[in-house]
Structure formats: C-alpha cells, structure tokens
Image: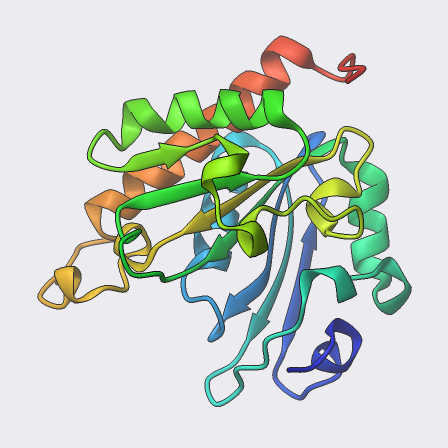
Amino acid sequence: MGDFGTVLQTPGVEEVCRLRGSVGFMAYHGGNLELMTDVIARRAAETSGASLYAVMQPDGVREHFPSTTVDRASSAALGRFLDHVEIVITVHGFGRRGMFGSLLLGGQNREFATHVGSTLRTHLPAYEIITDVDAIPSQLRGMHDRNPVNLPVHRGVQIELPPRVRGTSPLWWDWEGPGLTPHTESLIDGLAQAASTWMTTRGRSDSR
C-alpha cells in the first residue's frame, strides 16, 4: 500500500481536474484500481455541470492508498478543486460478500446523503441504497476528517459501488453494448440528477 503523493509520481498515472459547478465529483482511485469509478464520476459531472477531480492508474499499475493520504500538499490540482467546490460526491468501488446489490452512502453530510440516496432509489430500484451510517461497515463510512469527502466547506457523500452496478461483475460478461451496461447508465443518470437538483435548490447559499 502506497500513499497519494507517491502514486501521482508513478509513470502513466493521469490526474484530471475540471472546474465547473459548486458540486464536485471525485474518483481518485480510478483507472485500473477501482474499475469504472472515474468513468462514472466523469460522466455524471459532465451531465450535471459539476466539477471533477479524478486520478486514473494505467494497466499494470494497481496501487491502493488510504483516502486520508489524499492531501492538497501533494497536488496543486486537488487544491484548486477543493477551493472551488462547496460539496462533493466521492465515487469508490468495493466488493464484499452479501453486499453485491448494495450501494453505501457515507460521508459527513448526512442531509446530502439522504438527497443522493432518495434520487438513486428511483433510478436503481433493484439495489439496496444504504444511507444509515450504522449499517455501513466502519472502514467504508468515510467519516474521518481527513477523508477528501469531508474537506470542502459543506463536506459531502462517499458512495461505495459494488461491481454489479459498475458493470464489472460476471453478470455482464456477455454485454456487448452499445455503451455502458444499463445499470451503470442508470447510476450515472441518478448521480447527475442528484447533483443538478442540489445545485438548483441550494445554489451557493447552502450554509450547512
């Protein structure tokens, strides 16, 4: 296991920062590490007009680093992103027996988690959308103060996605397209709607 700053210096690792709206999407375990997380975050950000910060590891590199090592001191781009956005959705992947149909919504902004969860339930009715922090495994809750999901002024939501909804499970081995799997497309639509409706109803006046 490495750290964020070291991974950024690894040949082939790509860092992306796009500053748009006050809601941001993050996927710093993207590329070959937590498959499809960067694609999901990028598509949802583009659709909703949200900002984006992502780190993609290339084929042949799969270096996991703790979220608490993701520090603006290691990345000017990350610093610009955190200064620009007010609230974030960080996109992660996980796989755990008994939870392949569950999406876990952690992070310190529980009002935002409820909003995102309610929106996702309308787009992914076959999945269990868990917004009760006590029902989320402790290491997947995203509650640490140094976790990037909690660094913007209004903090945010950490969403943990199982392989099935990312289109990377055996369920989709015979999927030939076009485009992403239907579940992944529905997820992206739900995340984009959650971000855009939050921006519309709260704007830049959220004082939470």
